[in-house]
Each structure stands twice: as structure tokens, then as C-alpha cells.
Image (cartoon, rainbow, N blue to C red; front, top):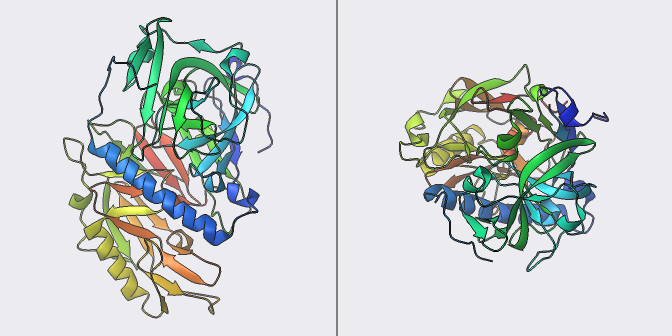
Length: 430
């Protein structure tokens, strides 16, 4: 949407802004589709391991030891060829605004970016942000409630300013000063956002300047700015291989689609970052799978198990018994199709090279209050340019199931935090 909005701090707090999200695949000319897809699956495996590791531990809060040294929208870009997160948005940091690419991530809370001077910084596409050149950069005192909200906070005893550190399950980390800064989305300014200014960063974020956390915690971007945008945001991710339409993210009341079917959000007492939902069952070819009961996906009282919606995971992972039942039923329904060898984590693949039209079993995910019928392109996907397609689900030995972004394609996924619910609107990218 080519639309100009006024400064968010002068507009109605319930106004909304929409930004296009562009896929980095379209900008990549030096890698083949097969190379991009293979890299994506490798990243995806690390991502799932990271989430499972985080969900399996009990985070420490309010630690005091020093760490190891209105509404608006934004366009989103896939991070495939950047070597880091799945989707990017371009935003301005500081005053005057310096524009950088940031990973959008519903599985993370802290907003952070690499800052000069760097003790250790990975390679990024844009110049490193220098807080000394921004008029709106302000460090946060150690005594501030914002500092105490950090899972792992430290204090620079000389300056008496707050330090942060974030470690990810794959070994990536960022460490630096915790501060407030103005973020600019096109011409829409959001003042006083708590951000990590990382001077020591390492990991799988190559290309992006940092990360815009969209998680459920209080320090995420929605958590900090929810009152301005009525605690609502949504995104719609297009089929990256077949659509010229842009992906988009929307903040504010306009994020809520009238056609969305909603399911309640669940609270995990152990971890408030992830968006947990209740999956009751699965249907294949119009038949509910008898062996796939709600108990397989249950989030227990101490925070184990459950199902999360995640923008940064590509392939949906289901607990192994549910996946096996689903896969076997799909194979029976697709027995007329020519089978092909396994590919990477996919164990159900087909050779469709000489077929213009293919009939496959329907797939429906039954959430509490919302039956989500997936388009065939969301679960039978091309893995090469020779007509090989694979069933885009996988099993996991972890107790945690993850609904990934391939299955979310084409839906407007609505996060209504005020109503404590997540919605799915089909054909939501128009």
C-alpha cells in the first residue's frame, strides 16, 4: 500500500498502518532455487532445535549478574538469502533515522540491533548503527522497571546503566546496552521503544541488522506498544514461489480481518514468549484421524508440550504419533500419485513432472473454535525444478508442536492480544 501516514504520536491511538513485505528470494540472483530451499531447511532445523531447547528450560528472571561481555505497518522481506531469519522488514532507527533490515520474529521478545562500537559483530547489509549519532538514543538506568523485566539483566556499575543479553538455543547471542530509541516505519515514528544495542553479537543473523521481536512477552514490540495499536497485529505471507503479491504486516485495528476464524491463546506458566494454541485434531481427505487426539497436543500445567504458531519456522512439526497417523492417511489418499525418493526431512514425496492437474487429499487443522482448511499449495510443495513435490510436514521427538509459515501462507494470521486470541483469514493477502 502506497500510503503516507502522520507521526504516530500525533494520530489516533487506534489508527492502523500497513507495510508491504517483500521476499528476499526475488532479490537473489546468485543462488539457485534448490540451493535456497536447502539452506532454508537447514536453518529451519536449527530454528526448531532452538525453540525446543528454550521451551524445555525454565528461564531465570531478574538476575542481577553482569552478562557475558495509533497503528502502523511495515513491509516484510524474506531473509532466505541473507542467511538469517525468514522474514525481514526495513525500518529506521534513531533520529535522524538510519534504515536497516530487521528480522521479524513471533518467537522472540527483545528488539535489538548491532551497534557501534563493535567488540564483535557479524556481517550485515547496512552500516552498523551508531547510537552516538542519534538525538533520541537514551540508556536505561539499572533501577528502571524496564531493566528488571529482562530475563537476564546486568548493570554497568560505572555508568549505572542497564545491560542485556539474549542467548538462543542454536548458540547465537547478543550482548550490549539496554536503551530507548525511536523507530520509524516509512514516515511513522514510534518513540521510546526499549531496544538492545548490541556490541557483542554472534550467530545466524547474517545480513540483518537485528531482530524485531513480535513475541507475547512484555518487552516485545507488540508488548511495549500494544496500547497505541489496541494490542493487535497481523501478517499475511504469500506463496513465495507462485505469487507476485507482497507479503504484509499490519499494526492496529485494521490488522483484524472480518473473515478470520479465531482460537483462544493459551498461557504457558513457564514461558510467555510463544503463542500457544489448542489443536484438537486433524482431518485428511474429509475424515477425522481417530488416532490424533487433543491429548497429543496438550500443554500441561508445568508448561511442557503444547502447540505454538511461529512465523520463523518454515515446516510444521507435529509430535511423532500425530505426524505418522497424518502421513499414513495422506499416503493412502494419494496412492494414485507416483512416489519419489525422500528429500531432506520429508519422507513422503511424489514425482509430478508430467502432470498438469493433480488431486490430493484435503488437510484440515482443527483448533478450538477454528477449523483451518489448508490450500494444497500449503502442504504439497516443490522441492526442486524437476517436478518433485513433498508433503510439507515433519515429525518431532520434542513434545512441542510448531505450526510453521509454509502452512500459514495465504492466510492473514491475526494476533489479537487484547482478546487473547489468534485468527486465520483465508485469502488474506489481497
